[in-house]
Amino acid sequence: MNSLVWLTILCCSTLVSSQNKPQSIFILAGQSNMAGRAGIIDGKWDNKVPPECKPSPQIQRLNAKLEWEEARDPLHKGIDHRVSGIGPGMSFANAVLAKDPNIGVIGLVPCAVGGTTIDEWNKGMKLYNDMIDRAKAALKDGGALRALLWYQGESDTSVLQNTMTYKVKFEKFIADVRGDLQTPTLPVVQVVVTSGDGDFVKEMRNTQKSINVPNLKQVDSKGLELLMDHLHLTTESQVKVGHMLADAYLQF
Image (cartoon, rainbow, N blue to C red):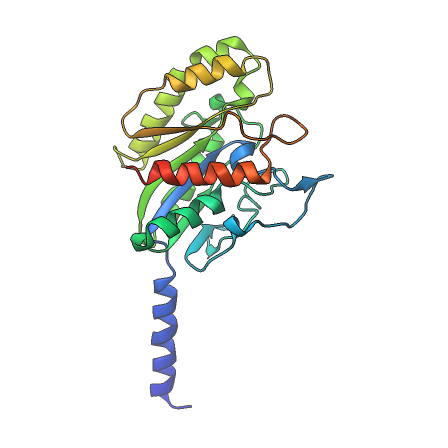
């Protein structure tokens, strides 16, 4: 094979690679309902993927090695320290693609870790630092950071004081993220919790609803079906959350 043919193949390969680099990047952060626990039976994921969560070359994920790969559930494999199943990420991405075909290749940056409190996401803590590092790595190849999707709060429902101070802590968290990623108007879509580890879910919901920062939209998970543990969303519910997140994002 002559050098001209090799050059042609190389150029074509580079073009395909370039086309698959994400143009629109989203951070997925929080705890287990963002990471996804739907479809987990006896500690193992059942490998059942609903059509709303189907993989696509137009949806990439940043894996644990900071490499882009075609996204597929479980999105948080290698990121969360527990077994992950279906979360809202893939249904979100597919819904955004369907409603905004000009958005380009979507890049999902999974960062959620189950059982974590808002204090564990403070600036300087490992979870926060890892999220910022992963977001920066995702932006190395170009593309724009479109939004932070946040689903967390269940682990802060065991102590009333934690629910009362959540508003201030979350607002500082958002300010820190925007500052460290140099995106002062970064859109944030937050899921208002419907379940929790403790008795103060109602108080947490009220606190979350009172959060007031620019470019923040909220979706409410109240009424969605939970698994037998009364804490995690079912697959159908996760799909619905993904669609709600997509609709909220597209309002920006």
